[in-house]
Length: 131
Length: 158
Image (cartoon, each protein chain N blue to C red):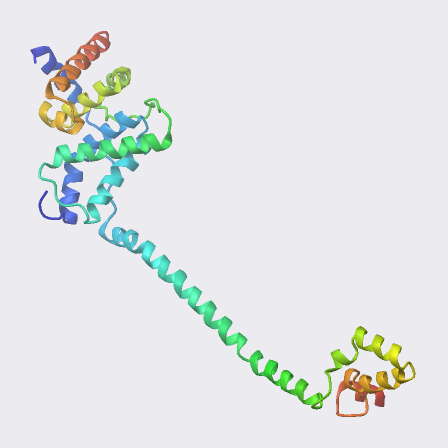
């Protein structure tokens, strides 16, 4: 390297490179390091909480469903078809073809199981019928 | 590579080499904010404790900044010309001269510019630069010689 090069190097070195922005402090670094795991833990916690609420909210409905089924089964006497089967189009059609006179009696009997009985119980229909 | 770096070790490296590394990243990327990002990436990795202490800190740091800057350059998928943002501090009374030096540096091809930055502001030997660039020391010497000739030519009128 000749003298000219050394002079030029010295000239260039008078212009120092600018300082970069400071590195993050220890505290900020700790936050940066744990930010992602903390966020993942928070999301998991919220997910578990939502699942817990969903499970808790669904519990009271279960006995009601069971009770409905039980009540529904009790309403149909043993050996008889369910009201839905009794009033099916195929069944009614068959009765009408075999014995049209019995169709009215059949509908009367079936309607007791299907339509609400305004005379029994203390339901809304009973109250309305009383008025 | 030896023991892991402590926070204080990394801070010391940053104090000693940060400015030259930023100048180097700016020379590669042509964008001061992208250069700052590349530099921060390298030092945050060092601060994470996942990187063992390098045996030779300066070449290691320049190489790490180079890799990060070039990856960032590829990710942006375009060539960014050196912008007019100042990356050299200008001493009082030499503001115009500083502008001319930066202009002359921008006129150099990148392979010459990076050698000048490492040699002049990184104060590295030609052998250390050759290690960073993974080229023979003779190649570095010739790039440096051409760069100085060109700089001298540009700056002689100022």
